[in-house]
Amino acid sequence: MEPQLIYITTSSQEEAEHIGRALVEERLAACANILPQHLAIYWWEQRVQEDYEVLVIAKTRKELVDALVARVRALHSYTCPCIVALPITGGFDEYLRWVYQETREP
Image 1 (cartoon, helix red, strand yellow):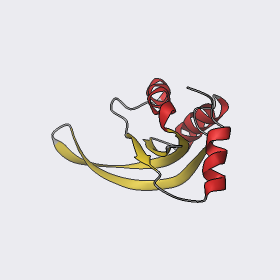
Image 2 (tube, rainbow, N blue to C red):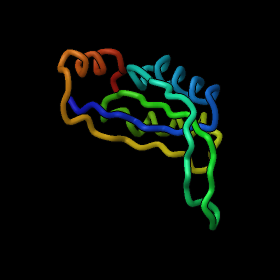
Image 3 (cartoon, one colour):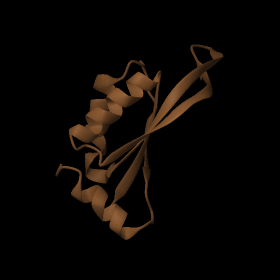
Image 4 (cartoon, rainbow, N blue to C red):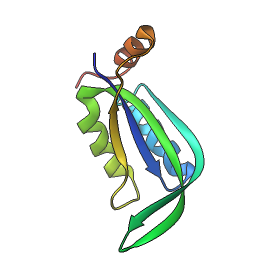
């Protein structure tokens, strides 16, 4: 098992919910957590910018990361969205098994 956390920033609560729901319904993720609006400060188009974003954290298996990223890209409003996979190196084994059971085979 190689579970992954996928960190995704979105432009709004509605977009975050749409993406999170699609990932879970399509079994690309076992779970998607939506975290409330936060300020993002970033370099884009030759200057520092600030925007409020909503965060999605999805839990999946490593073998589904490419398919999940492709699906998020298809649903996302940004030209260059933040979609980052982070390995889960430990945790509650029963929960990590659940992530595998609730996601589809690649």
